[in-house]
Length: 291
Image (cartoon, rainbow, N blue to C red; front, side, top):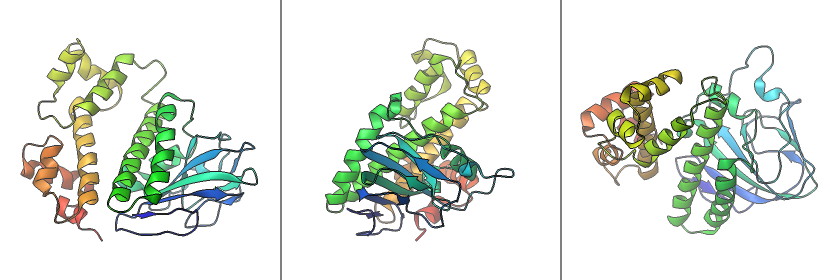
C-alpha cells in the first residue's frame, strides 16, 4: 500500500497495491496504466477539492460498439467522488489549479467485477447525496492524515479509506441496479443497514432480522427475492467480502484464518474455507499469501 503526499511520487508500497495520492494539480490525465480515451473527459469549471477512485484490475471489455466509459459523464462538482478505470483514465478539463485526492485501488479488493467497474464509471457519487455528504469529507480527511502518518497508523487509516470506498461503490451499484427501482420498499434499506451492523454476530439469521423489523420471515424472503438474491446469500457474500479484506490486510503471522472467519460470524473454519474457495476460486491461505 503506498501513500503519497503529492500527486506524482509514491512514498511506500505494500503488497496490497493501494495508493492514496493528494495534492494540487491542473488539467490533464488522471493517474492510470493506459492512455486516456480520446472521447472520455471530465468537465468542471469550479475550484475546490475533487475525489477520484482509480480502479485497477483486468481491462474492462467493451460493452457493445462503444465502451460505456467512453460516453459522456456528468460534470462533477467539488466533493463528488468519481470512479474511473485506470486502463482508460479520463482526461480532466478542470480549472488551472485545483486540489485532487486520488485513491488507486485494485477492483478485486472491493469485490468488483468488470461489469461493476463499467457501471461505476458512468456517474459520480454526488457530494450532495445522503452517503456522499457523510463519506466524502471523511475520505478527504483520511487521505490527508494517512499521507502524513507513520506506519502502521498510516496503513490503518488507508484501510479505513478503502472500506469507505467499498461502501460508496456498493451504494452506487445498488442505486443503479435494475432490481433496485425508486419504488423499492424503504424497509429493505433499513434491513441492509441492520445486516451491516450485525454482520459479526453468529446469531444473525432471517428469523432475527424479521423479528427486529416486525415483519414475517416470509415477507423478508420476498423482499430479497425481488432483488434477485436471498437473505442467506446476501449475508454470506458480505461476510466473505469482509474476510477477504481482513486476510489481505493482516497477512501471515497476524490473525489466523480461523480467527478471521470467527470474527465475521463463521462458526466453522472448514465451512468457511469451502465457501471461500467456491466464491473466489482459491483457498483463504492462497488469497492471504498472494505477493
